[in-house]
Image 1 (cartoon, rainbow, N blue to C red):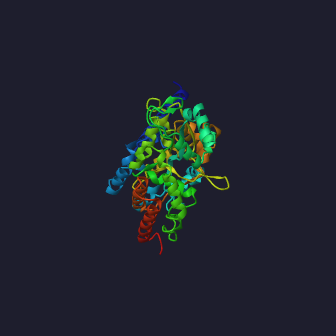
Image 2: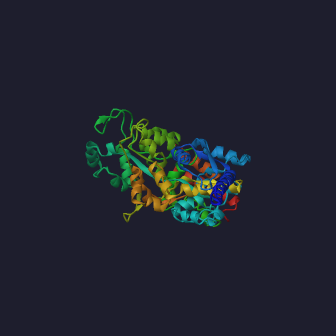
Image 3: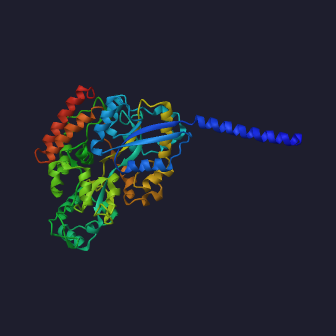
Length: 478
């Protein structure tokens, strides 16, 4: 072998050794990072898990394991609260309703993320593309401040699910016109223009007894025209009452005006009383369960899927289940529109509503390594490709460049309502006292819903309770 040949062989061997060493070093540097995330058990979080398991490749090269703890919605707050306050530090992330932010931030559990945003230009750019109302609701504490704590997981709004086969039926169209001198809306565009006055007529018109003719056939069961949230548990009635309050030009206690905003005279203003009376006026057209305080978001969805409702005002997050022919009698017969509006004297529609959906948040006890992996995961989750895929799978996106893309509306039949609805969203309180405020308010609303108390007494009681609680907490200055 010539000297030249020997040098080539030695060079090749050296290259192999270097590659092996480098490969071994890279392998040794890779770490296994385990993240645990508390999530409500419903379709949007299952989609997130499926996406992570099938699509996610950590940019760090680490082996990242994301464990999802699926908790039923009715138990979710109680279970998460128990975990956080016990000190067990079981989770690195959690899906969180926006109204929990203050309580869990002040408790020392949710991590402020401003430094993570400021330290990552890519993440900062993504958040600048988030719908402002969504970012304020899901991320800020104090509410509408520049202190950020969360990222959108599943943004949500209330929309109108309706039975297009019934609304568009020739007999129903003719009979509605004869009774009210108005056209019964049929297309989604016509339904978008429905105000609460017309919605009340729809509720009255479609209230039928078993055996009554309905869209050309005898009704198989008692049938009802309309439904919306009127449940005692959690925040179910509050979410819909708030919409009526804001649309009537009234307000809930506004934490952004602390310490100068009072509950007395605001929460129980004459306009607020009128708004609650308006809300209560629709209960007569709903199934009898409404008078038991049991008309929560699960019950209204169940009744709609059972074929017992003409229209249901519901969160988009439940819409996917309505399309499943194995469980829904409405499958293939349902269309979607914006929620009804209050039409003013000037003819303009006012559509204020309480935003739904949730952010996901980071915990204060995470290691730096865990936070780095979470930030990479967040950037992937909020990336254009994944957000489009999430929308195509039945979720929603708060990223403006995604939902303003013309192809977005084609993913699901309810997506046509999304961009138009977002601009009308407000949110309830973020303060640590939210739970006491909410429990008392829900109990009072239930007394009104079940006919035990009038609207004025209800709001007077709520305003008095809130004024004292918030004054004692230093959030209202005498």
